[in-house]
Length: 491
Image 1 (tube, helix red, strand yellow):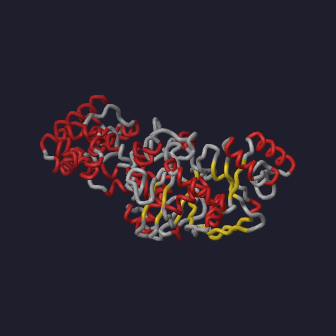
Image 2 (tube, one colour):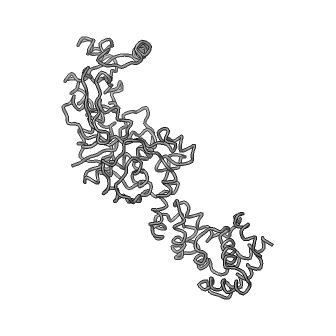
Image 3 (tube, one colour):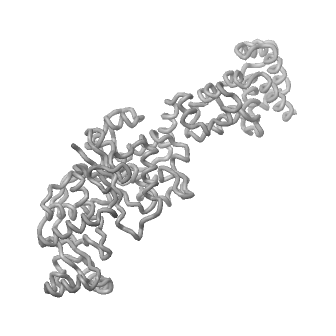
């Protein structure tokens, strides 16, 4: 059975790049009828941020891609927080030490800094590896007795012992084969001085013990793939398949999408609100539309139809269609996709999902609220547009659009306005258009004058939903009152 994992660190809010990684893991699991695991990688205690883990859970729940196994639900292969797996890491680091695949290192920070500075000046770079490890203070250069004493005397780190002059081969489902000579690699730290594992060690141990079959993660981890492959080989374990997803680039295409880009250009980079920073949920995006958009950042499904439900994506997802190059973020495209998804919802569905958006409307119109939402639905881009778009049914226009006023100024507003009022007082709304035509013919005035002036009186501009449908809902008294106001301010 395919098992995949999303393994974020609780060091702050979940970026949409992280959400896309979670989504691709979810889609891969569902496509293969597998299991989606959430593992919280919280071993960096200094960078851990309060409420980050809860934020991750809430973000995934909003998007309806909740995991099958996680720290809350539990599962057969827990604990699912790395901070709770300390005994496991101690057991497996001993395995590597006993096999001679890892060693203790006692170097002080000052000694390493001095060595780094010297090598960068003389050689142009520094690596702690087979070429120089014997000049440092570690269990390879100390006697067994000295090593035992230093382990007892002070905190120490454990490093991976990388054999020199050998090529390490790894494979990526998106990028193909990856070959690196071991001389280019460092003897990476596996266990830190505080006794906590590094990302490299913990994720390999956890992925093996949790029976992860495919690792889907961001491109930034691709340079770590050879080290992880060496760790699997050191343990004698088969490695999982790997897939490294392309970066999400900022709109200019010149760098990774960041919160700074969002703050500067006025768009969210988080799925939901984090502290004072609003997310896509608060901006009025539907979760299904948000997922539909971010899925296309790095994945090109074979189908021509861009609009996809989560179920569609589960069926369509294919590794072969994941691209190598970065995907440029486009807010207007995200908004367009959201608009299309909103249009597909019925008025009743919108009201049920977002009652706060129509609360004022519902208080006035009751059962007619659905008809109003249906009338304006295709004009909505974001859910938050509901309040502003339906405000014309709650309040009389306070200001009039200058361009629209200029358009109707070529008519005799008083004359046309009085003719319109006469038609409304005599005829039913359903017959009003014919009445406008007849009245216009009698006075040599085109239908456009009647229609435009009525629309400006009702909504304050020449744009808006179907005019006669609005009049049916507003009724004669409101319509006549708004006509009177327009006539009076133009006199």
